Image 1 (cartoon, rainbow over the protein chains, first blue to last red):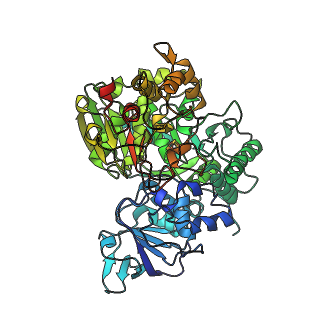
Image 2 (cartoon, helix red, strand yellow):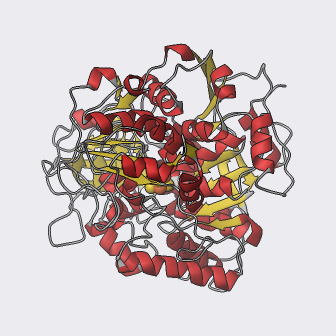
Image 3 (tube, rainbow over the protein chains, first blue to last red):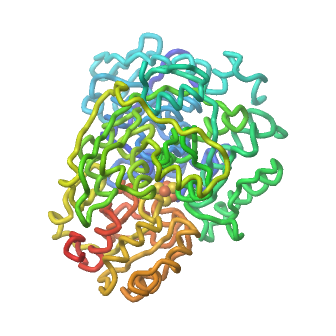
Length: 188
Length: 432
Ligand code: SF4
């Protein structure tokens, strides 16, 4: 995980329900291979390129980075394709956590397996509380997210069985830490 | 203790006598499927984590079927297929269906069972969400990302959560003009796009028993559109005959216990089903075809792993025969074998290629995913403007077939064909 320390702080980008993987990274960018560093960055530059033009730009135009370390959404985030390009595009653009009400299974799993971002869940419908650009602060240890404008603190759901996988930095780190596979993994 | 078919298959793959929904278990993998869009990234993960010289865990169990971006000038798409070729050569993999050679197939989810890689009772993972298709043959099959697939390549194992089962019982007989696509669109309409999240969707009952294997594949293919982890249909004599005609490999079919507990059960009277569409932009936006007659269309598209099998084209051809289409109508066979079938199968002495040509459809396209997922800008059938499309594919998300401004109505092959003739969404029973 890229997380430095215990907190993620910054402006949020807010979306509704059923944000599908074609919105997150449209298919014509799937010729990019995420394990090639230059193409990983390009995927970041196209994050959320499938959103209709009525939405504010997600990635800062002319760059490969979004100014939003946190994305907030409704239910069934990441539905659709198994393309790992989706959590990777968000992670490459600088998103560190998504806070949604619920996730589609494969997206959630890919986010955990890659360690690209934290797929967090809130019981409250935070996409109705936050507006794009509002400042939020996630406290991972306390399992909360705070609206820095109103000061209101919202609880995040317990990560449950996937917590050790996330803490190990993804599937490979977890499998190594439990002795499931050997080796130290990539030098980087 | 009794168990569902899904619990039994996963228990067997985990070497355990019993598993329960919610258990996190390591399972042994029988087949790992990948394609040109996710294969190169999977290989990248595999080599990064296990080393550049690592060998796949079992050469017989890795199946690579390029299908997404084949007929395009896009250079990266070609580079990606070359990456697969290099890997296949280095590893000596026997199951590679290389574009441009007689072995090329087309859409992986139709090719995988065609080539005998899907066997009842086995565990199949694929780097594609529609891997759930293969539950139609009584296998546990689900989609995964590149990281999980890279892990399987090295170890032959994956850590998964045993899903709950949500059962759908379809009693009685489907009416004329109604097919598997109408069944699954109605079910998704009823339970919603996240109605079966994390769950195995199990389909049973007279109407399922009456369906041929291809129609069952259409149903399981769209389990993911309700959030399902898998779709599954217990193997019967039809399944076994179909599979044995395609593989010599031994397999042990698994069935569930009739009294096994499930999380939820939905019972339908199949005789009440109607030809339908899913309106933009979600597969759950169910409406009867008749109620949407005022929707004018600009294009019809018959293809994909959902609606591009030989049986799908037979259904479409029966409607189209003797009529002329009012809008450009794309005919995209899923695989080369389906394309051969279009020349072989006849209705009243005319083969399907002739029937489509006489109805004024576009020339039959080469087998691939084509515009089902948009793809590179030069993809056959890709939308580029505000075209209203009626399509036999499985997703109608914004921009799915290319243009963000082109609304997609999902439909059965018969409804798509009837709509092409009418120039608006139409009920195929008016043309039977
Ligand atoms: S035909 Fe469409 S849904 Fe099926 S594998 Fe290809 S892109 Fe995916």
